[in-house]
Length: 367
Figure 1 (cartoon, rainbow, N blue to C red):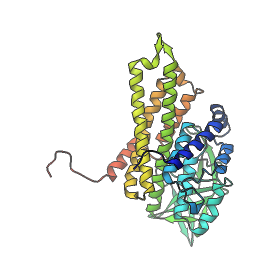
Figure 2 (spheres, rainbow, N blue to C red; figure 1 turned 60 degrees about the vertical axis):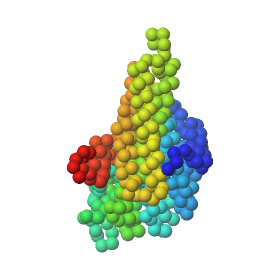
Figure 3 (cartoon, helix red, strand yellow; figure 1 turned 90 degrees about the vertical axis):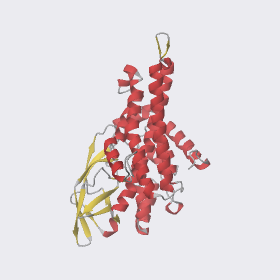
């Protein structure tokens, strides 16, 4: 694969960077956090700029840039800690609808989400917590998903439900659901959604089978890792600037060996997340789903383990001001932790990776 961005991807990065620089300033993000954690104005701008469908095929109203294009866009979300649920809406909503939906489902959902007139979010967690009971042709749902990004603003939710031994991806309107806002680490808009009593008709079932669920989870994890790239890169850039300008004992902090070495370690972690995320996105775009299964777990593991190391280091290297919850670096710390523990913490991902890697004898063991 080629790790350099082509002209189209470069243009996406440039446009996204300009929009977020203008619309996701420190002051604006802080204000949105106090108003619920979802920037509706910024979301409209992204829709008007045709960025919501950047990874969808042209058939579905997108630009056809795939997961690689989405990763570029989400890196800019992370760099600006922009309070919009782009990773979840696209990877947990638009992409599975485009992949598994019937023509009627795609026509019913995609245009409204892409133009910003409706909000579709994914309600995915580490486990499938919503159950379904068959009532004729319909499914009666029960259960709750404890933290759904932008659940309080959503018009439609895509949720995995378990009926006996089978998993379905189901589209559920939020109008009759019990939605309760919850506070999360990143201060973004999240809500607990109870699906108990909701009924899914045949036309609401998007796909059935574990394959569709795994397909979606791969993309969600790569999307989260892409946000981590942006969070870590910007936190590191901010720290480099601060330690270069902050003078103690007659010299900049950055000239102290301990500071330089810790910053270098954070840089290596950031680049590891970037490379693993780009490779996983590329494998998904190439249709190499089996290889991407492991690559997505690896990318998310780096975002969880390495990402935490980076945001801890960058906050620590700011000294006392790093503990100020109103100072910008603290927000990157919060976002880094939010990503790290969403859809699998590092230890759980390592265990999952161990289960999925081919078995092999220890090095040096007799054949």
